[in-house]
Amino acid sequence: MISNHLLFKLASGEVFGQDQPIALKLLGSERSIQALEGVAMELEDSLYPLLREVSIGIDPYVVFEDAEWALLIGAKPRGPGMERSALLDINGQIFAEQGKALNAVASRNVKVIVVGNPCNTNALICLKNAPNIPAKNFHALTRLDENRAKCQLALKAGVFYDKVSNMTIWGNHSTTQVPDFLNAKINGRPVKEVIKDTKWLEEEFTKTVQKRGGVLIQKWGRSSAASTAVSIVDAIRSLVNPTPEGDWFSTGVYTTGNPYGISEDIVFSMPCRSKGDGDYELVKDVAMDDFLWERIKKSEAELLAEKRCVAHLTGEGNAFCDLPGDTMLPGEM
Ligand SMILES: NC(=O)c1ccc[n+]([C@@H]2O[C@H](COP(=O)([O-])OP(=O)(O)OC[C@H]3O[C@@H](n4cnc5c(N)ncnc54)[C@H](O)[C@@H]3O)[C@@H](O)[C@H]2O)c1
Image 1 (tube, rainbow, N blue to C red):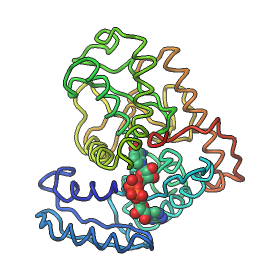
Image 2 (image 1 turned 180 degrees about the vertical axis):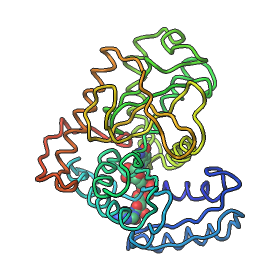
Image 3 (image 1 turned 30 degrees about the vertical axis):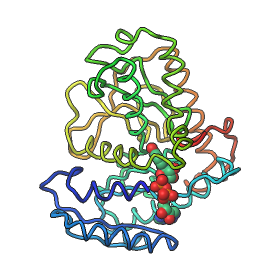
């Protein structure tokens, strides 16, 4: 569903620019190969001037050859009654295999955006299986959460979305994620100066962002494929265009040497900036208070537990699953 929205945006030039020809290599599974053929036919029939190649396959070692960008979306949804630990294992295996394939055949400078859930831990599994590609090149998509948070703040303040900046999502792409209203700005002013309703900020806002995907599924009977595709476009564009002065974006990145004291060796969403060269730097001077830090620690604890649960897939010994409660993905209720 997500890919079907995204592919047409990629082919149109709205992501990498109108002067950038593009080759799309689509990885499917045995079950989805017919659907893939259908999508490829639709892409061909759209006569996009920038689209120079569409190829499909089910072997990541073939499909990922020389890839410059790997958008890892395919994964299994959590079925009724399935434990989060089971989902971590089933989908983790997909990302271990894809990490190995990227390591073997992709461009050495490939940028990887993991969308399939649980995306932070899948990204960690993927990068651990790709030791010859810099860990910095791997992202877990938390941009949809950022966009949802901006939308809620704009609605509450009665301003247009583009007036909301400096929006960080900290942590895991799950219901422990932390949308940061301490550092976000509206019209360049701290959110708390513009929205005086602290109770709303502390209680309603965070909950609304965390559960937005689940509410959407309940209403529409399917997940947020279109807005997720838009957020993948935003995530890529943030890496290939310079970040506006003073602003930043959120993305799940590998923690190594972060100034905030967040555990090393996990994939954690944090504020980042880019020069527009595909790379990024952490924003290192974001303010913390107890309320923010307490919630960040909860998301960190969840990610550390997820990591222990997939140790067999990251090459770190035997897995031990002690997940703190059965937290949800944002698309679940
Ligand atoms: N990070 C985010 O913000 C975010 C937001 C929404 C959804 N998601 C996640 O994105 C994923 C995809 O969502 P969707 O709505 O497009 O689901 P979908 O079920 O419509 O599509 C998933 C596709 O993946 C394919 N697939 C399964 N295993 C595969 C494998 N090993 N290799 C290649 N392809 C494989 C399936 O055949 C299917 O076509 C889910 O895991 C969902 O939870 C993440």
